[in-house]
Length: 346
Ligand code: SF4
Image: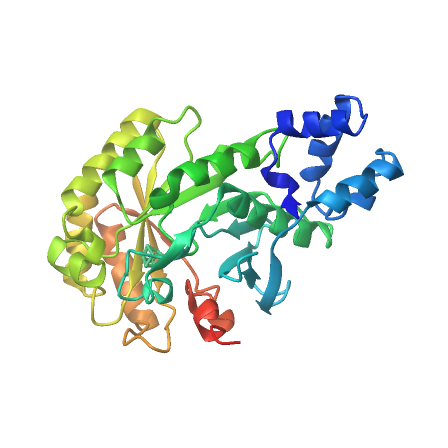
């Protein structure tokens, strides 16, 4: 059955006309489509029963199903392994913060071609891009889960499996519905797109009318180290990424966040902190320090608490704004791609 999410309004109106229905029914249906918790046609109570039955013969409201869940609503993060229609699986994480806000961490690809050395998602490369409907459905899924508890999805980070700028058309298409008042109504300012730093992609994001918040996964202050842990750096380089980020800031006035995963003995030395501070000094930037979430098959380890504090203090002593992100996902295999790999054969 066809997903109703992928049917444009005009096509829906034509289909309804064939069923002898007035045009306004299409708007009614669209409204229901983005009402969290509405996953079946019979819940669309202002539609005539025969119409609901006819629609349910032809269309489906959800195409994904949950293959595994790790964590509960009392944990800071809940991870969902979602199975798509073609049997591929992706991860989506719902994050809860102390202020009672709930965010989705969404995926944009099945696997990832960037092959960052510390990441489980990149281990097998990329299978395919997600469609805009599959990206959008992750938002609806999270909104449904939260609605069932009387909670609301308010924020999102595009930081799950995949490199967002490698599937930007589909992502922006999905986000246009997510941010629309006729969709989920989540403001662009509450959505962060995280990228390894593809300058052309950053440029495109800078030119949007309503720019999303930009986060760049930097993870190293120089090309030698960055290329070692992030092969995609080869041919781009830290300087070009920082230039693209500066341009984004100039165009949008929005502060850029730099993500820095701390890997024990790799990029967590005081010299790394000083070099990073030197590169970012003078920029309106926030550095998000993230102690590494270990992945079984990978050799990287989490630095000690003291090492993390030392790194943070050095950055602060140079006037760099930092946020020390807690490892919300440790208990639930939340490092990107871990759950999918661990359930690969099941
Ligand atoms: S960290 Fe992000 S960009 Fe790097 S391999 Fe993993 S999913 Fe891809």
